[in-house]
Image (cartoon, rainbow, N blue to C red; front, side, top):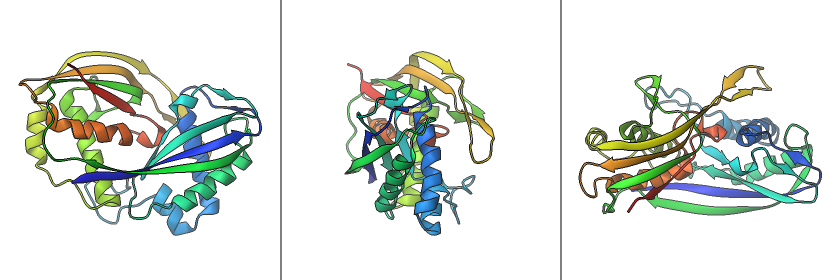
Length: 279
């Protein structure tokens, strides 16, 4: 059982100076991309990529999660001088209808029209494509303690409320559900695992230490004029299993989560994580 996706890396040459607001590069790109995709793609393709609707599926998912996330945090607060090169990534989870050509057309036109608040023009130079198929099951790896870094603002929900601390059962449940849902809608089908049993084992992993910083950030939709909170916490957390090697079975989910993101509003670049096994 695997989790499959594409990493697309878009390389640009700045014809004019560009600026990306602090903490909002991914959101700026997402909003502009949506408007341009509406112009360049046909209606079914646009809907499938940017406004997917579920005909049937898990409870509470009348709107499908979008089949992509942006990775552009390295551009936050950056000014790109004219004549310089820059890039950002898109992780595309629709392996059935990836629509890579439509994405390239949208970004080429978007760059020519201008990126960022000042609408600095750029040229799309190339697009790198890499396919991944990450194992989800298989032999458990030995791990008793891991450190998870929350690189961009993250919000995790439990029992319909935002969690104050990233307790491991909550973190794992949100990773598991996101991976399973993306597979269900855009891949070979939901995860074939015992959700309850894995959740019970995850509950035996404790939050040994965390150091978090909370961020309050907002975005304004240029289409609707509405303001949305896109804050959350960054920092790190260390998790300890009750018994030796007890974290091993969860490592594939953390590994996949580095590509999918976790929690609310991942499409805006939130919930980006990385992790390492502690010796």
